[in-house]
Amino acid sequence: MACSQNPAGPSGGDPSVPGSLSTLVDVPIAVSVTDGLVGTWNFVGQSVTTPAGAGFGNVHFARYHYNPRGETTAFGRIYVLDREYLGLPGDLSPSTPGFLARSEPEKSGMSNARGSEYTLPANLTLAGNTKYWFYTDTQGAFANSFDLDIYPGGNMWHTGYFGLAFYQSKASGRMVNGVFVPAPPGVTIDANFRLRGTTR
Image 1: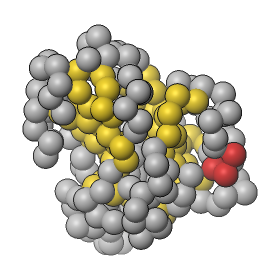
Image 2: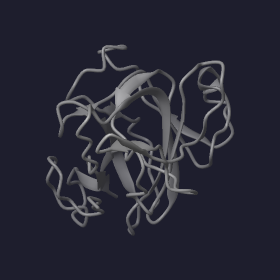
Image 3: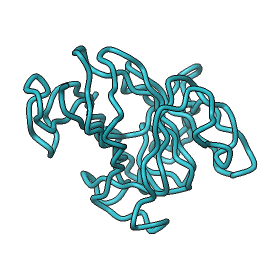
Image 4: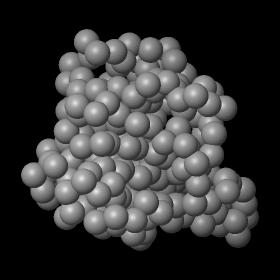
């Protein structure tokens, strides 16, 4: 499955070189669905494990847009936590347990602008080989792995309604040659995303 912990994405750079903005984790779209688009419209969270290293700053995070493939997107604000969050999207705030940072609102608002990404505050440093959670406070369109667990370093959480809490995302069933194939039992899925930063 397409998953890279090395700088193979559009940002280039080398995470071993201090000061170089590079791709730290890249989970591009890997699911081919012939009857429609790969995507969803939800509030979303994704846990991410950083590569080994002393730490990473100048943090940027983006989700992949479901159409066209290969473009990133950002919507609303993104919150970085050091733990799982199972509350309501509207309750995300600096007082949320585990809160580390949040982005400024995207200029695109809810327009889901293609090619955009979240920029986190300059004072945020992510430790190496550590799991973090990235949650949005706004609904938007983004791609996910549908019925495959493509990223061993984390999982996706989502909710489709502001009055329902985030929950861990499970695999969906799909149509194959006109026949519904149920979701594989116990499989969790991932959002398609890219994490960039500079080595401290």
